Image (cartoon, rainbow, N blue to C red):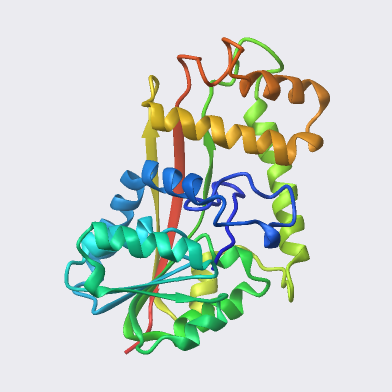
Amino acid sequence: MAHHHHAPGHDEHRPENTHGHDHEHLDWAELAPLLENQAELFTPLYEHALAWLAKEVTEPGLIVDAGSGPGVISGLFAETFPGARIVAVDGSEPLLDRARARAERLGAGDRFATLTGDMPGVLAELDYPADLLWASRSIHHLGDQGAALAACVERLAPGGTLAVMEGGLPSRFLPRDIGFGRPGLQARIDAVEEDRFSRMREDLPGSVAQVEDWPALLTAAGLHHTRSRTFLLDLPAPVPDRARAYVVESLTRTRDLLGEYLDPDDRVTLDRLVDPDDPASVHHRPDVFVLAAHTVHSGVRPV
């Protein structure tokens, strides 16, 4: 599934802050380097999430990464579960090419396959039921999230686990007061993001308004033993170059996509923050950090 963006902490292996336009026409392949950099940066968070899943999902034969993007998490599944076959599913063939190349580099090419097509219908093409089906920020891009979860459950083996990464907290990169502009810029960006995300959901084909109680949605889709846990990415200042590059890219996208929805003073502040020639920009500031929290909800198909 090749559509993910960021509502409150919404998108990880898809770039955050992409709600400002018709996301269905986003060129995911063009975003591939950003997607990979972001997912690699968030690897510690994903590793904790997969370790948590591995406590209850023991020796899965088949793992499906639904909405895999360039396959960073698929690769982590291959490492976490050395006996499993992995299938990465996405709407973008160029991103799946990257996923295959990554699996080869990891030495997991012989137990790695890809499936191209749009969620959730493409799941019907899986040859075998999954012991673990993972959907990271892909469900919220489908109009009827309940129906999408039900389609995922249909592809689970009895006793299989569905895990969805949805929700969490908006990421933070900067102190509340950065020394210019009105303090609290990121909170105001979040408010704009929330409205854009709601509009994105409303505009999806077959959109169904839903209380975003993910454990309840998993239960309604027929799963038992639902549980949720939130995982933290904490990269304090001074950050490594890769984290700084991610912050630059993220705030630049925010300015490009959401700038018109911010008030003029905040737009000026954001312009300064992403200007490489400004010593107070995120290119140069010593106080840049990355703090993010993502939630995983899982449930088990009854035997």
